[in-house]
Length: 359
Image 1 (cartoon, rainbow, N blue to C red):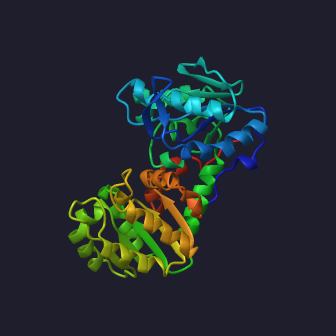
Image 2: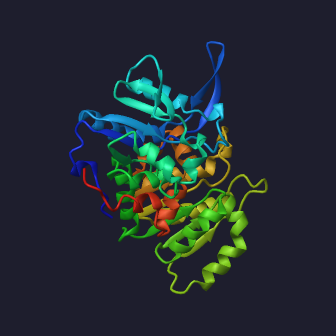
Image 3: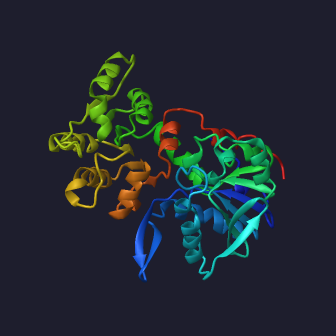
């Protein structure tokens, strides 16, 4: 899939609205006897840096927009201020400056980088309101989407804004599309797909899709418990299926897959030349016995040196925490977007980029 790229156009000196993925996990902590909010995992912020650095080299002014959580109106605990402070450290600037850009509050990171406050503080964002989209567009000359994790959402900063500005894919979005497509189209075989986590409504479509594509489909985590009968019946009814389906049993406390199921999964992983993984094998806590199965799955994938793609917010955060994330061929920042893309759905954010206005 060829998307309009920043490399194909002269953006020198332009003002760019950069839609980035800023939805990072936060935690409360104490620093200098004061309570503060910290970013627990900054993987998604780091993913945007290559695009930001390229635009700076092109002498662009950058207005970054994004969201955090699911606020109902303005909620101070979901402010993007911690994200602004993280960018301050990245660009070695000491103090934040509050700013007003059009109708939007935000912060000046540098004299050429500005971050808008949580766009979901405005209900018009999730409604993909046309007037709200126009207000966002009025801030810039061009639009760049680098938020793959949001491309399955029909929101103003993802879809509506593209009606008013020339639009392009950021470098991370391009990498997402390239690597996920590579994993799906003519993959090296055997192809092993591992699906875990707990959101059965978003995971079932990918399981069904992979019946016809993968060689092995391994289902673990909470969805294994909820889908034992349903998935087995569906598997038998799918015409032309080619995969072997393994559904894990869970431990009595329901927090992990059993040791027997784990070793069955490990046997299948040993055969793989390509692995796609989304979702943990159970509860990921702070104690090692709470995430042992997920860790062993990760270590097994890394050991076989197959082409490996991992995604899902909790899974990526966990792998980053135990310092294994960079051992995978590609880490997708998308959870639902990754699943939707692999399931063959058309993502609104990607579809909106396909017809490019000239600058």
